[in-house]
Length: 317
Ligand SMILES: C[S@@+](CC[C@H](N)C(=O)[O-])C[C@H]1O[C@@H](n2cnc3c(N)ncnc32)[C@H](O)[C@@H]1O
Image 1: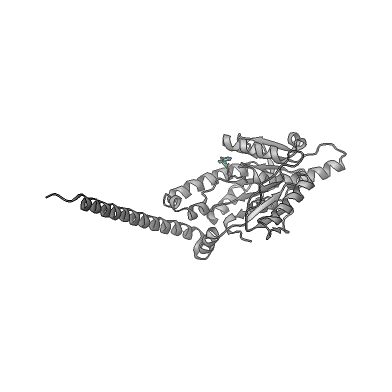
Image 2 (image 1 turned 60 degrees about the vertical axis):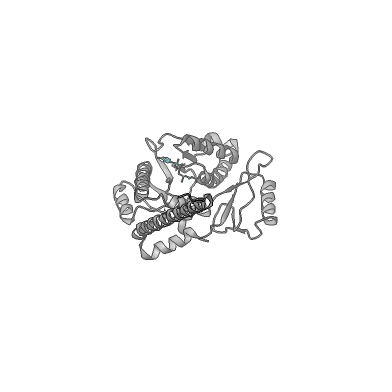
């Protein structure tokens, strides 16, 4: 039998669209089942009250935050504030509970600009990142390690505190250089260069030699620090939740592998802490449960440790 050409192509179009529907349905089912696994996994970690709250925060909109670089000129900083207010950020608000000048807004802030001395005037990062550096409570003369530093937002925030103190002290000591240093570590080559670039673009050269050291070589061996910030590589749940394609690739083992990696970096850091020093583990993603934290306290009983767990995702303002 000869089938007219038109009929043949209609059949093939129908078949193709049915196949497409079947494929889409299979993908939808797969995504649903992974979403269930994902939710169960975190439900188990956080409990029935906390996980739904975390999830809704992760799904919700996040505010933009601009940290003013106090090393930029006053003219350049005023220009930034004026430009922001008169463009997208008429709702901008100064964050009054932080001692680093920063602003939040529902919209993106204008890009950083160089001042007359080539120093950039503002750094965009999230508010929680500045809060953890405040929690470090940097004191005069502190030797601070930022163990996972690139691209450098938190290093910059630490320097806003540390160099303030250094300036005051050097004034008292008639210009003589005082102790007080940030050691910023990054093991990834490409990201290390980004870190270097950020420090060069935001911090005046006069501080580089005595107060900043950038390294990529396990600075936890043979050294001891007053404060350590550990901003471990994270498994980016916010990103996963908002990107179906990424979420469909999620596996429990992914979170567990990250957790082990984070734990090992953390233990390294504890060993490098000076006795009676404080430390701050910024926990972007908590796959470790309370038991691990307690165990860590026992393991680290050679020094008094205050563990500060910051779950960035639940910080809403
Ligand atoms: C969450 S990011 C850090 C963000 C940074 N603190 C900031 O505020 O811009 C984690 C960083 O840790 C680095 N990293 C991964 N494994 C590391 C390790 N074993 N030691 C030190 N850094 C590591 C990654 O390359 C990545 O740049």
